[in-house]
Image (cartoon, rainbow, N blue to C red; front, top):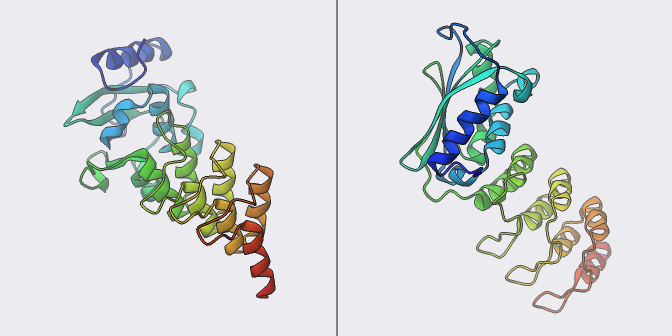
Length: 248
C-alpha cells in the first residue's frame, strides 16, 4: 500500500485511514475553524504519517495528539503539483488557531508551507517556490537557528542530511560555525557524517575549533570526528585548536 501523496491511491488510502481512525461524526461544522494549507511540491513524496505530524505542529500543544482527537480532513488535492490540505479542527476557536500559527511563520516557511488561511484570514501568503527542496530547507533552517524546523525536517524520509551547499558545507558544518549546540546535537543524533570536508578541506571539527565552540568540539569528538584530517593548507583540527589557544 502506497504511503506517499503523489498518486490517487494515496488519497484513497488517506480517506480509508481517516474512516477507520475517527468515529462517525454528525456535528454541524459551519462554525468550526477551517484551515487551508498549501505545501511545496516536494511534499508529494512524503508519507501520510508525516502529514499528520505537520498538522499537529501547527496546533496548540494540547491539540497535538491528532491520533486521539476527532478531526475531519475534507480533502487533499494536488493542484499545479503542490499539495493542498483543507480541514476543520474541533474544540478550538479560529482566533486561537490564528494566534498559534501566527507565531510559527518562520517554521512554516522553512518546512515548505507557502500559504495558510484560517477562515479566509491570511496567516501566510507567498508564491510557491519551484526550487524548494528539503535539503535546501534544512540548510536554511540551520542558518536561521530554528531547531524546531531542523528536527521536523530530519524526520522526513527523503531528506539527505549530508547535502552540501555551493561551498561544500553540510548542515552540521553550518551549525558548528554558528555555535548552535542544540542543532548540532539534533544532527548528530540523526546520523550526520562528522568527517565530510568542504571545498577547501574544512571539517565540522575544524570549524568548531576555529570558532572555539568547546561544547560542540566535545560532541563531535564523541561522535568519532577525525581530528587528523587535513584541509588544503595542510592544517588539521588539532593545529587549528592549538593556534586558537595561543592567540588568547
